[in-house]
Length: 197
Image (cartoon, rainbow, N blue to C red; front, side, top):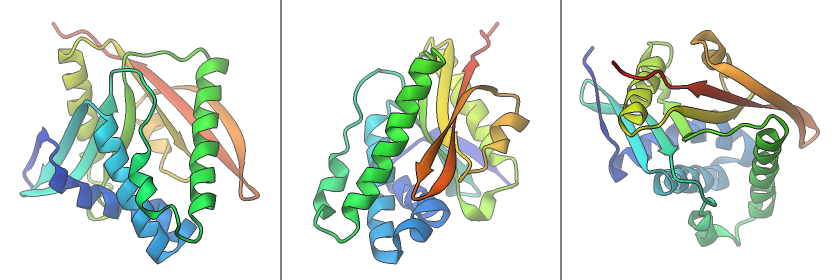
């Protein structure tokens, strides 16, 4: 198993899209709309990030981490091309629910950092092999090289958030949001970045 890291390329978006489609969007929005949302979601985070790292396993992209270090509003125009699709309004409403929860967590728990991980994803065939941890370590090293002293991320219990607890990240806050009648835990993590010697 040869694992390397490189700057992400637009071609890596197919792996990222497949991963988010399989994990979230297929079950929530069905095959057709789920695929459109997954493609737009991966592209949106790629475009809004200024640090993009891809984990390459045996020559194939198997993980991505997209990070924003410059504050600003998220450009969601990637979703405009299919705004007439049935179910689009529900999907966008869901995205707004999560965004409002994240903004509320930032305010309530006074979370501020130099960087925000927008998307950290490992392909389904490579999960459980330590790639996520190594990808996060590589990303944090690059953030340190950029002069960042801390980072944050938001996740929920629809993901493997135990991963962040297991690797020792600091849970800063949690809120429960009504997600189609289901109580979804939205969780904020923040971490200081150790200075390199």
